[in-house]
Image 1 (tube, rainbow, N blue to C red):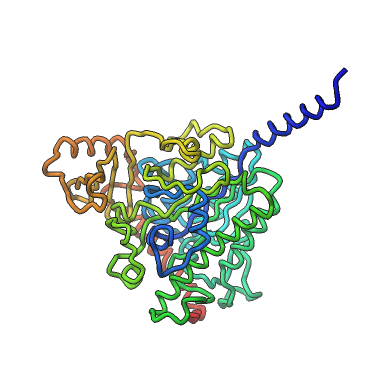
Image 2 (image 1 turned 90 degrees about the vertical axis):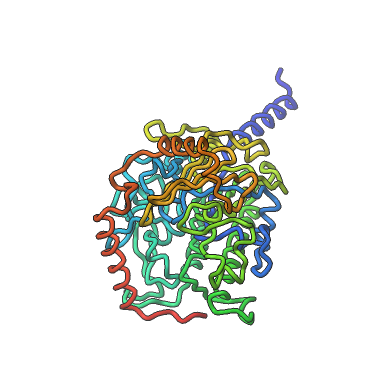
Length: 473
């Protein structure tokens, strides 16, 4: 006869197996333009980021987390497709009128689509920038069950917009008819939607791509808070307040996960979408010492200061607490990482350049690879490749520059003249990594792209000029 005690033991065992087999919730928080130099855990002393600092200490902080490339749309596309910009269908900010950006092709398989077969609910909240709703790049056609925020990155320059989108439906703010700008700070609604969505999906595995717009310009904020009385410029005060607002909102997400008792089964990866956005001689760069990490470069080039992110992973009980890693990884690793966590397959009909970071996240070594590769198509194309500790940068129509990151992490000494064999290797690898594209020629922007993007910006400017500006608060 089967004893009750044995039955109870069996049930407990089966319950444990089921709990262990349940795939983790995954939240990727992508901050628009936050830099390593903005956060206390990377050495910032003037801007207060207690929540982000605590989460980084409770998890693993990364010193060499690389973005897809150093502007918005292609960096995001690399993240959700698992492709570096030698293959990715979006390799630059390609604006289209009247609203939106160049769409992801219909055949693209995103991380959201990779997770769906494992039963994941999926949402993107914040900023999209990879295709308007009537195109193949709509988030609703790329595996996301829910969207809230700005579809178009040009519209996301305003934090007091006339409208946002709930799924694919335009919602006018403050009850107006879209002819005037109200007084609603968009991040209030975006954060509320993210929290509400998490709570409503706490019983099933979920993936939230939280593409928060803070602290991207224009540097608008509803409350200056602790920085109001600082002897700084209005822009400097607003920027600091934007970072602290980002900090409190991310902290609120972690608090909610604890309250719902799902923190132990939720992975949060936090990152910026490119490195510093400012020259060290700029108004923001000087005061906040965004070069304090000793890296060269900022947004729209391919030196390390533009490519390395403020990034950490937080997963209580799984990601080692207090770990600081100097091992490199890149945005295109995220899709295969999610596939392994969910027990699904990476796409077989599109290039996947990334490698799974699951073992690395849990305390192991970063995966070994032949190289990291980047392209940047903003006007005159730039290319860069890293293999081992060698980093090569090829500005448009110029010779390859070569740096030894082991001894020169700030990329100050170009040693190309004394390492012809390494330069040749870099060129070979660049050619291997690059798939030619008529839309993204290495000769520069096409006439079509220039014409379409000009029309897009004119359409956006007309909408903004027709509405009153919001005074800085």
